[in-house]
Length: 230
Image 1 (cartoon, helix red, strand yellow):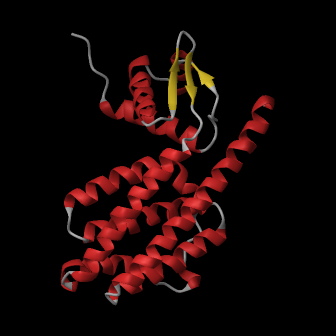
Image 2: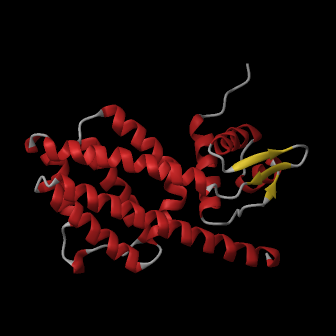
Image 3: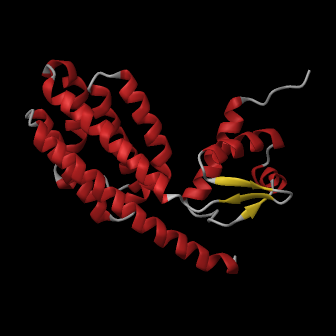
């Protein structure tokens, strides 16, 4: 009986390839074969193929007839649609948060207060850490609203936009802005000012969306300039 590869191995390959695309080690237009990936990652063909199929479903790569695979350009129309969906989900959650009994969400919001309502000197400047904390901030707000299906869909959207969203934290000014904006959103929620929280959240998401598009286009351009010399 043929053994099925351990699911975690295929997931490891998937995560590595997604990082390669996110970090522009694989840039739009790059072509490669499954054999090349197997050799580079030192894995068998099956987990590589499973990982590539997942990336294909996410619109990040495509299979080329008789010539392996190709990294696709970032589909900003799709990302814009996902950001629109994110906006609907998060503003809905915040409206619910501001209307419900404060004791219901207090434990979760307390964790956010301890992370984001801190003096400037205590803020993190680690881009990777802040990116992860940013995701956790928004997911916690949605989870605290108490609708499990809303939280599930929001988590799926978060997974799909992570590849470009994390670029928003490459500059210290954007990290500082994230702290400031999260603090304002959180204070509005704690004060149960639904309209203000909604306005602040919309502005925050829109600013991030504009910034990541700009940075992504620049990063792709720079990666393509150095690619021929590699």
